[in-house]
Length: 170
Image 1 (cartoon, helix red, strand yellow):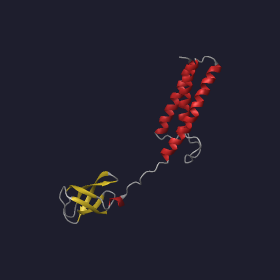
Image 2: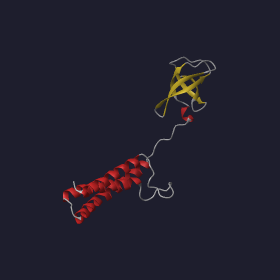
Image 3: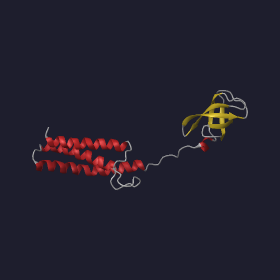
Image 4: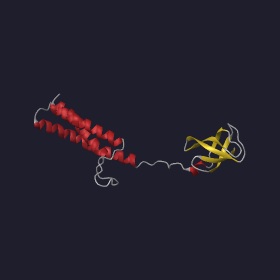
């Protein structure tokens, strides 16, 4: 393997490592104010560097590059492939960052939920119920006006806190 190919492979591997850091949420490329999204994101730099390196290594081997002119040509071929890759990385990362997500459930979302008693609710005390909030099962402390046995179907009347509810049988 030629030295030029090795250098291009190192550039490509560095780009992949940078892309892994970008996917983990590292904000390495923010210069100045971290709240400002500049014209060049870390993902774009990583995608460009990875394709430049690997594209240059492929071109270097195909051209059997040994002279400076051949290495420059291999680098140019790698850069031609890297420009669209950097643009695509920018578009994909921007789309992922701006993706719409559902709101985080709050205690108000508990009211009206149906569930089942998993620990008996005594008179004047707390038991436990399991309800679904946002499609996920959640176990909560529950209080009722009268005792409720295990396995009874319940309806949440009021959210007393984020982890406790007032229920009645359904």
